[in-house]
Image (cartoon, rainbow, N blue to C red; front, top):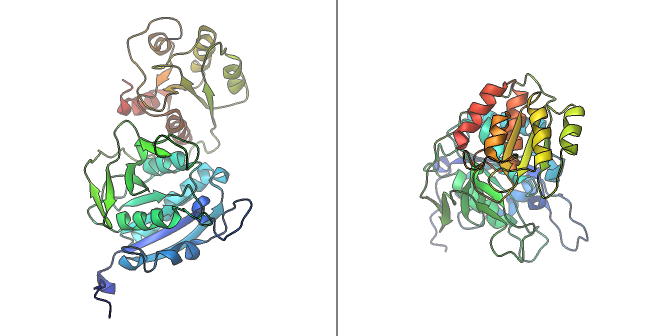
Length: 346
């Protein structure tokens, strides 16, 4: 007879698993091409019987989408945030969101900006599908449930759990395009490092962050679009002008070094900034935009003088998510500038 002592049903935390699709939902052997086919119930099945898995918590599953994460929209993410809030109001003690890795940075950061609940909200994904002999899908789901079910992991904002590392959504960066061959893991935390890890089925949190105030989901400008451009050697302002002429409500530039662009692009950005918010973020994996070091044309001092907003240490991916949500919420340039100031932009 097994000596394992099972936690009484009434004492087990209630965790809701919301499935959106992605590689974590790919199942079945012998597939030549990968498509998300497993719904929430299929994702949950391998967790039963796993040490600290679904049997350690009452896990309810809901399938919201069954698509590649590249199909998701901001409207989908707002609906997801509403769904998370609904389950928390109905008594969920933790929520796990299973999604694709392609837009994991955007999804997690958007949720972090839209949800203000203290209940753990954990996003997870997979780099290797269930059909792969070394799939990480079930292991990541188990670890995500363990984190979401632990009452010690509260009021940390939205978390991302991958490979038993616990990341803050605002630190998450993709460092490698695939699951294998990387000098490090596919996702890293920059600039602050992971908040903790999962060991022996229990989350260990060693860093805590202040929460960022939630942004509104009642959008005054629901169609606002933000263009993402990249500066580089001999890049001019052609695409900047095209973004403005096409009706974009904002522009994010992934800039060289500490937030620098070439002279021609600087002139175009100055013209754009007179009409719409323009945000500059580093194109590097991590690090801040500088504030007062370089005064040449296209340097950070020049760009600030021309009305360009600095993203601080947020990545270009995150700056686009934030600027889109701020513009859809009806925020003006002054409030947008102040908002980015939270991240070292001032």
